[in-house]
Image (tube, rainbow, N blue to C red):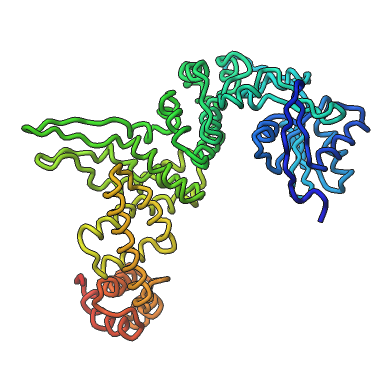
Length: 486
């Protein structure tokens, strides 16, 4: 174990010149290397921001006057490790103990009209700081003999105190140069709990169409970071209010709005699904860091606008929105280039999210419990987390009643699951044996017989035991082979 595997506190010390005392030996050691090489080295960007906020982590960003890649290789050699070089971006990462050190040379970036990629050239530290997204990310600390002096050209320190996101340059310039910064504005607002400068907000509204030149992968990565924030609704609301949501996630944008219908003396209104959904996402963010469960919370009512119907005497209905929303996930994941392995999980959560409450309303039968347990599988606990997050009433008595109802359902689930051995449920009589007993080859009929056995178990007509299942197969096989349904 090295001296650099355990992070120490980083304590900002304010003075007239604003210096920062850095109590991480590794940073001083890298500074010594820079002095020996006769070059200027700076802590920069988000690391400085987090240092001033007392929350610095183990990913440390450096900028150097010269080649960041060449210096990274020198550092790696000194610490007997290997630099991971990203030639395309002119950056390099050096892992040392628990730390990841990122090195880049000071540079300036210029964008041609409607260009997706900047023209990058060598520049000064000032050029480097000017090209950054927000003032709170445009501060630097010289560590190669500068006594830890904070270099703050755009009053990022003041914006930290004001809890404000503001661009170093005129906002239209900053966002036009790299439109992904519009997504980052929403992300940092959600992550840090900072307000967005009004001029920035207006610029994003003006330039929102420019987000189309950014690759879907980069947009989706920022979107997931918003969902992973402590209070995702801050960023999601900014995306909506700025007009970005309509472009990057139209299904979520369409959730907003309330329809009013007057029938006789009664006015019917359904609650605004968009703002309800944001509340559900915030609720679940307090319960889990699983970003895909948070994504499921965002998706749980996604098909309500499509299934919305008004029924005389009872008001608005959304029948089938769970199934439709579940079916949409494959298309959404492909369009947004999200990992398809997570699509099935999200679809399952969306499809089942109303089932536990239906159990409460219609009666908690063993058969209904068995089907929920089997359909949810290993994700049953996640499903109930989503159900609890979906309680957004302002009436504490109603909230308590819903929670108690879910507790009753869970208690019954535990009883039925243990009694019926449903943890990894499937027909006790397997497909191979069904083919042997019935004298049939692999076919659709095998699946029909297997499903019939499983349905009989879930309905409670036979126990979840091999002998009972085999006896039931012998009882029904001739009817099924003859084309009858059971």
